[in-house]
Amino acid sequence: MKIIVNLLLNALAVLISAYLLPGVKVDGYFTAIVVAVVLGIVNTILKPILILFTLPITILTLGLFTFIINALMILLVSNLVPGFSVKGFGWALIFSLVLSLVNSFLQSLSK
Image (cartoon, rainbow, N blue to C red):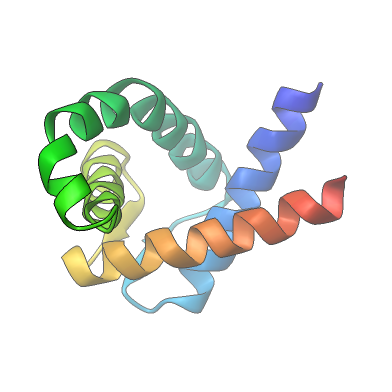
């Protein structure tokens, strides 16, 4: 049950973040659910591998390179999910920051 609630909260965070940013478009709530699922899968499988391979540059930039990795994950998801589009790398970077803020706010409300 907790997984479903987290999934729905993540989808709501995707919708709110897309509403706040003009460079990000989500067609509807079902698309936001699909984005939340695909983003969760990509972050679970691909992100640790990328962080491991980019560990020297991540250490050199004091962890700031993970923002770049997050933006690349958003761009990958926008290419995989129809109905979800991000206009460019800058919008993906801003979307990942806003999404994390909105998601943490919604998660704190649900506890």
